[in-house]
Structure formats: C-alpha cells, structure tokens
Image 1 (spheres, helix red, strand yellow):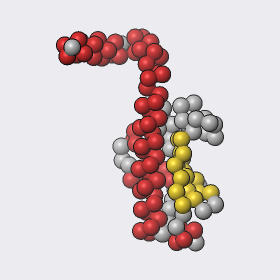
Image 2: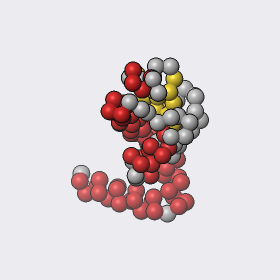
Image 3: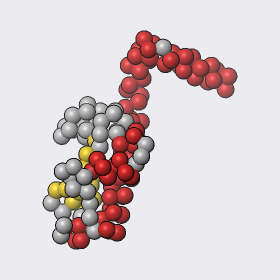
Image 4: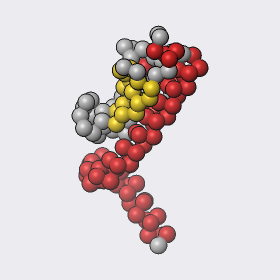
Length: 130
C-alpha cells in the first residue's frame, strides 16, 4: 500500500509540474481543496483576531480600518502568503459598533456574499475611546 501511495504522489507531482496538466488536475481537485482552504483561512482569521485582541488590550488601540490594517499585517506577518486567504484574496478589517471584524471574501473572492469568512471580537473600553 505504501508503494502505491508513493507512486500516486509522484505521478501527481509530475502532472502538476506541466502547466496544461496542472490546470486539469486543479479543476478536478477544486471541490476537495475548497473545504481545506476554508478551514485554513478560518484558522488564520482566528489567529489575526486573537493578535488584534492582544494589541487592543496591551496598547488600547487597533489599526484604523481606513488604511492602517495592511501596514499592520505587513509588519506582523512578514510572509506574504499569510496576508491572503486560501483563494488569494486579501484579508480585510473593519470596526463596527462595539466590535471589530477580520474577514475573507471566501471562495468567490467577492466581499459581502454568503461564502465570506468572518471572525469578530468585542472592542475593549480603552479601544472604544480612540
């Protein structure tokens, strides 16, 4: 069984190496990849929200949603793939009412549609005064 698995992985790797076969393989694999990409993106959103929560508790401030989030992400997460969801869209940040939200536009890449992934947390009293 182990040899068959290794052989299949080698064939898959060879197929992904060539651009024409890569497109075909990825088209067929997309239904299997989407749940994995969604899980990965949800995990990253939870980590970002936790880091933002720590920032607001320790410094009493959050990035201003009007342009400070991208620099905050760039400084905090130096690896560029960390700033994008599993489908290649940038994560976004907004403050609304007494909460903040980090989000991904989801599989379709269009914000404010049913497939969006969103992680929200409450603002602390210190952060609300800003």
